[in-house]
Length: 323
Image (tube, rainbow, N blue to C red; front, side, top):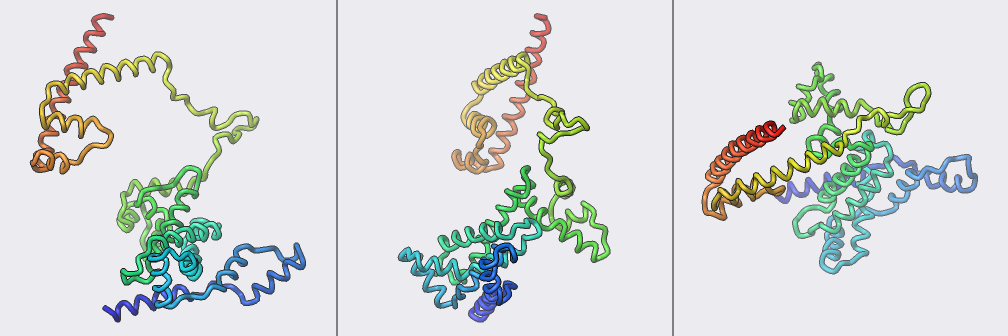
């Protein structure tokens, strides 16, 4: 185990010491820029990369000591050293996502927030190097930022959508290199998602955002917003909807009066609430199995379906007769 742990330590250290492609003369260029404004444009990214190279990396013992000082005594200076010594790691991870989001500085900024969260939550007694732990926090913050800012209309929030967003084009190229046609079905199999999700993501990535206030036509007087249908209910429809909901509420209350014990609890806690209890929770309450709860629930649903079918059929017949 010790040998394996040392191997992992070496791998993470190589990540930190990776070159950031910053020319040694970068400092000189920046000074020259100050003296002759306009000749050499100021590059904030280059300046930032130059600055973070000045922070030394930590060895395993120093890293552990600082992490203990922060966790046990809240030493802010120790937390500062842990953050600054790992700023290069943030840049390395941010560059992985630069194709998805061109502003690298924004990605680095979000990654730095993730790095600080990692320092807050790191446990130095778990036997894991801090950089190995921080990678997950950094990556999570960068991915969340990209997903929230890719477009005004969000491209994806579920795990499957995030997987598609970052891997779809990469998997297409891989399949083409292997001699396959990257169709939705094959892509779905390789990425372990539904085919419909692949098709939907391809359509989203292919289309750009449009402003609803943007002018259309030669005269430029109409907008996309003016072509959208108004889906608001008319006063008559709104009144009918309100009446229907009131009748339905009364019918459901009357149906509940015919239920007892477990059936009533399942009806209220499983079928009517927005946050239903699980089968296990109800089963534990009454000392019965989940399967038994499911059977009772199915019976209640069947009775409810038959009840509403009869009641609303009678209601329609009554209204028709009155008309």
